Image 1 (spheres, rainbow, N blue to C red):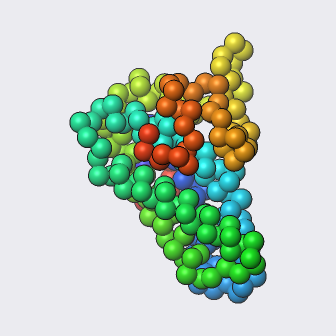
Image 2 (image 1 turned 180 degrees about the horizontal axis):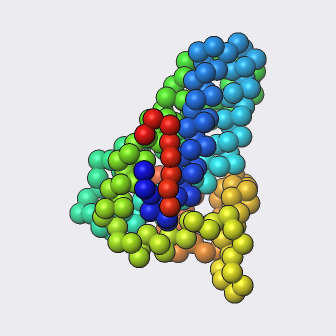
Length: 201
């Protein structure tokens, strides 16, 4: 499907998320205790290093942009935000399970199913809605497309994904290019403040 250039970085993240979802479901269905532990551990690393930053990008930059162009919060956006909270809960549950050395099939399966459903909701329904309602010039000002690339000389540099994930995990201090006082809020506090190709789409 054709995706607006400003959203391509998030869609690429979604591709990585679908890979993780598939691994979780496979480990839940066919994996022994050791395989389930490995899958949960790898998901935890993915969530800490990539998914947390991805969720912040959506919650703090993309979703507020959509809300400026609708009279009330669309049901699709509400559902996506609820799923964000649920994903955080599953990530925490698996983190505890990995620390204990025992990961059950049910939690792996539920996490994989939710991650898959969430990504497909955004790719198939929410992102097209955003592309329809938000003007092109506003989407292009998001600046997500080059968030992992070096900033031009004199420009406000956006930290790399790795460095931003460390900030989220350790201090939750917003990066220097964030706009607006609302972005100083921790993501864990209030969760409501090109081309891309996907399997099965």
